[in-house]
Amino acid sequence: MPIDLTMATVATMVSQVHPSVEVQSVAPLAGGNINAVFEITCTKLPTKLVLKFYNDTNHWKMEKEVFVYGLLANRPGVTVPTVLVTDASKTLWPQNYIIMTKLDGVMLREAADAMSAEQLCSVYREMGLMLKQV
Image 1: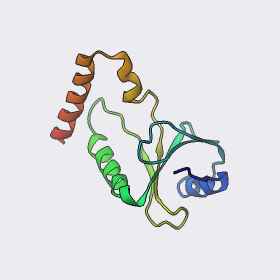
Image 2: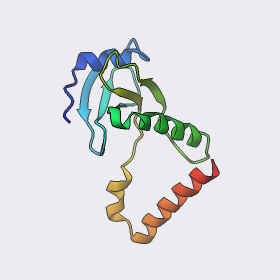
Image 3: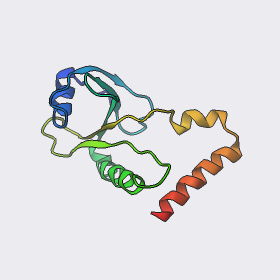
């Protein structure tokens, strides 16, 4: 489902946590299999932001995502985005949404093409071990 998102709406969302910044651009990001995901560039911020929407069927995934980031945040060598806003009120947008910092790097699905099956299995095994230890 396409999202008809305006710069003014995004600016209002971002102003909840960064009232003095100006939204410069909003661009769709690839990879949101279930939810629409956007990259936000703002003035006065050293990093880009990610805006992710959660439809009514998958609204619970927002809470799960925030929970998992919290579990992994204090693990040595693990970098997670900083969650800036979670909004389930549907006052600014008719879906739940989250705004977080954007991490540098590539998505695993992009890197997987260049990895051997053994390397890819190792990555998934390591991710599973990290979650079991939490």
